[in-house]
Amino acid sequence: MMRTEVLKVYREVLKATRKSFSGDTQMLQASAMEVRTKFEENKNVKSEADIQRLISEAQEASHFISTMIVQAKLNERGGYEVKASKDHAGATLEVPSEEILKTAA
Image (cartoon, rainbow, N blue to C red; front, top):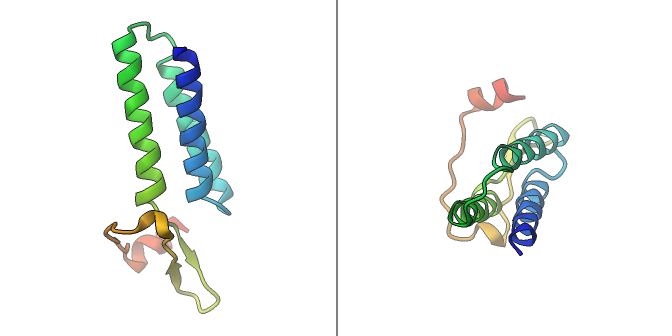
């Protein structure tokens, strides 16, 4: 039963990263690797309480990724656009500076 819950939340987190980083191959690969690494680090946890805590943390991470991360995309005018979806309703938008965006590209 625990294994099923762990696999379910693992898939939830990966789905959230695929949705948030759609079209960004580098971020998709990096986030998938990070998610796998985090789950692998905890594969030997035996305590049911610890496993439940980790599942809860993974669910929170999935929610955060889905609702708080929006990627800016370079438009044809050379600027960046952010298109938030209905999942982001009520979230506060933090726009990074042009300098930060240029160094990240």
